[in-house]
Image 1 (cartoon, rainbow, N blue to C red):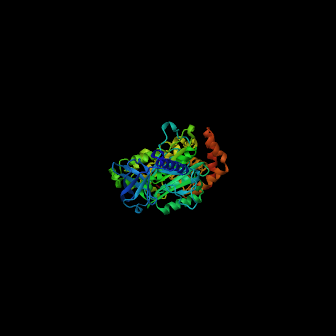
Image 2 (image 1 turned 180 degrees about the vertical axis):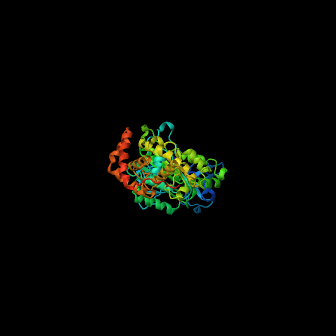
Image 3 (image 1 turned 60 degrees about the vertical axis):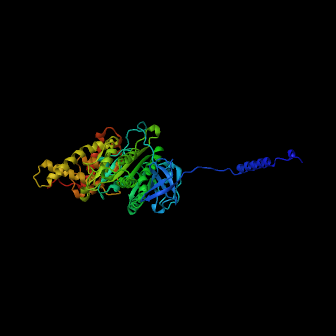
Length: 516
């Protein structure tokens, strides 16, 4: 055998190897992916500094070892400042950090109704896993101006002083503020309870609250059947500040999903004081420059971009609405502090709760003089405007004269009449907690109060007289319904006035001159 006749074994082996590789690749296709893996350089309370992620995006979700997640906050040239959403004690220097390629999101949909969850979507109740339908980013742009519609439908709270004096419309942002233990959360919970059978979905966001306080709120919502249409998002005081920070944004995304379906939604932020403090803590830890009261310069922006998402959508987009009730805690009745003035300028009005009224037993302790609604009056029912107009003026005169009457000076008969009428207005505006009133009951009481029919009744008998009037209104619903829907209000007012006189007659006493 000559050299020319020797077979080329090398070429044969190469062809055979290529054939084997091709068959293997067809049977088991290789899944190749490129991942950026960084390392933790430093760990502090609630934050971590990471190196080795050059392409990370702003607010991108990052995965640490031990199932701890974080959000990329500060993106510097050499390292990334990450806000941790879990326990920082599980992390050490040198731990791996992986990009996820997506921003922070939360599950949304009807499967969340009646559930208690964290801002990450983890259930906190014993109802099993959440039936996820969709996940949406927690940071979403607010609807454009052309996508919005005017606020035209009232959101009835069931609380006389609010529905009459400081009305709220669906799609409005109404701030509730006051000192500690003045009943801010009670107002919001009563409003949620009053939405039963009103086709309004509710989201209650507890931001950095005590676990015992949140448990009481959930128990009351369940006792009144409000959890059937409510989602509760909870962060406690001992949770990481990053989790507290994202809580209102995650809650708003859940509410926006209902609004996109054409539903009317009410969201309560309880409260944004803890949210601002959590963001201040994170910012200082990340070495962001402090400003007034050590808050960062963008503290206004984090609340404005949150509350701007509340709106009334145009009918072409489903006509849904998102009404926001942010709660804020003041210190020593100082509503001119930094965070209160920020939120007052963002929202469409405020309901101020006075500790002085609270101590006097005037509950809810709404200070009508310092409270205002810049939008809700346009959505208020005409029957309210007809009866409330004289009450506002009479109550304002009463509050001004009451101060002078305390000095014991001599008062003329007209001043005594104003003081007597004002005391009846204040007594009528009192209302027990968890007992919201229907529109018919409120209209009957307010109209009788405006007509002066409560003036002959002693203060001690006011509560019984109100109950008798409410019962009479229930027995004659046609009068109230006609007053609510008929344009000719005068004839219907006379019918209601006659009904109120008959109901209140047993409680009336001969008029006496009251001492100042």
